Image (cartoon, rainbow, N blue to C red; front, side, top):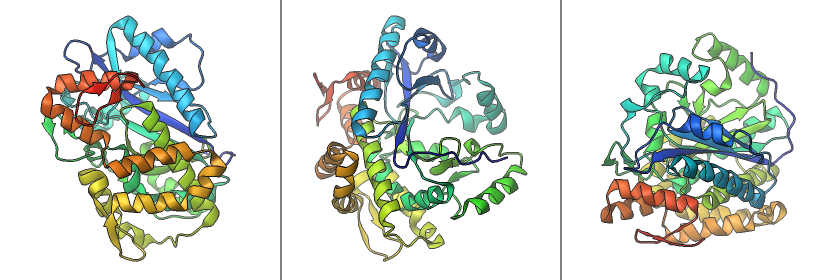
Length: 382
């Protein structure tokens, strides 16, 4: 049965980040999540540090936040608590949407009941699901508004992918993608774009039909790019790679929050099931080329660079950014779009000078607060 849609303060947000746990010998993924969780279990902080799919993953999640500054502050504390535990165990923590050279067949379930169930159901697909993403929840006033926001935000999925892209390498190879992570999600039968349903009563009927397949037990079994989370009273955006640093993760969350307020208050979009005609193309272009990819407006057919469309969107969000206090987040977005230099580009340029093992070592340093230099290496300080 579908969980009733909970009451939620509109445009509050929560952020979840899946991070990599690596050894400090060759910087491959290591099986240390259970020990790390035991080290942080009795510490006090806002949010949570939780297990994820395999023993090489940890999830950091904030509490309910009102603005970019609060998200950044909570993520900073969570990062530092986890880093302290990692130092005790002599392991490393880093961001990035994929680990550059881990072998999927070496990964094992975290042992949780849900993980064991999914391993049995999906087999090797679930082992290949050792990928790392950022999820952003946005509070909605009611269930119908949540579905409207879901499909409105779907028009901008390529923005979120391009901004967060940080997975150019997989299984030791350059994929030629800026974000290869989403290719692992695409194999699941209930992935991609949510069905075009705008009424919660209709969505409830859809869920009940899907539950009859026995593949679906809850909304967590839908691996959609954006999905409703009725238990939290939110819409959850799920397409982002995990950024290399928490400041950038907070900025992307601020962009999504501000965009959500703009979309629900101004209602400037004419939503249609025809949006799906270009959805997958726009999504692919963002995964393949990042900010340099092109996108198509489904209403007008107009094509332009993704970076250009983001800049136009930023202009439209200025008043909403002032209301929410997200000006600094949007300023970071604008600067990255102007420079055209993403996390994926940094990883690729660093790999041209160093081994992939060294790339992951530097990812760990960036996660701790070192600044990314434009042409590989890193700059100390924050």
